[in-house]
Length: 365
Image (cartoon, rainbow, N blue to C red; front, side, top):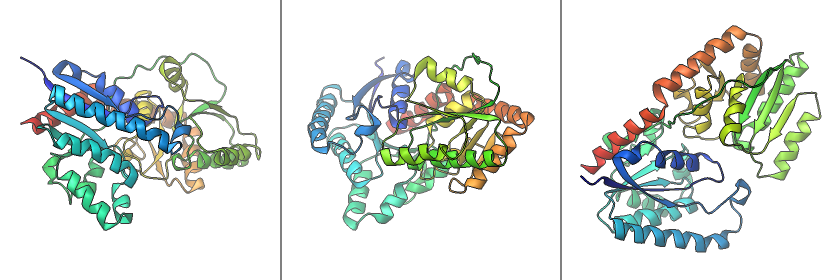
């Protein structure tokens, strides 16, 4: 019996950003054993620095992507097409072409939001944009979100049974630590953007140092996209003696060894998120996590159980949470064990594949 064909639309890395990582994991998951997975790569940027630049140069690339989608739909006639959507007007206009092209064929259309800023965008959008978004949604058979906390975003567009929850999930092998450290190892692993909170993390570390707490070292991994913001962050470090090492984006063995060597994970975004992959990765490494209430993060970081949920704009709040973990090895160990259990129970590839299979079969009926 021939496998059902599923067409996945989405970016592939580089750069290593959440949506691209997600697409790569889905395509290489056990889903390929149950379905014939087709793919259209929508990436037009190779680095974080390229975002928002050279827009005219990218028009030709996008047209080529639309042509590829059209020919693939015509030749392969997939039963279902999975399309991620953006949360900006220009981004959605680009995505809408995928939706409208797919609607010309017999394929079922399933949309996916990998963030949580949709309602904020709709509130600021004009009536024409809001009407067009609804028009596009009406051509689909459902919406996927990353957590139960995000279902409310689409309640006025779909009945609840057509809003599906599929958290991020993947199988991650974390090696044993390969070094002994004199100080507690803090890890920040995300691009160095204002919305991701690296500046506030550095300010919290400086505050702790001023209080005489300096039994830690920070490893920060990511990419800068703004020289002014980079200077602001680097200038902060000149006001104290905080030990902080910055690295370019990592992948593969080096990345997982970095997680293995860490003791505490820090990621305090101050703008809407979906369910960041880096949270899943920190869970898999068995790390206590300090994060913020954005998107579905609170569905994996349980305040007081495997980490702390802090106000990302309140430096003292971040510092206090970190102080508790830095001064209690018992709490670090307990939180770390709870993170690992949370990962194994909810965020492995098996759970993700089961969730996608359930949704695919529901839509393909």
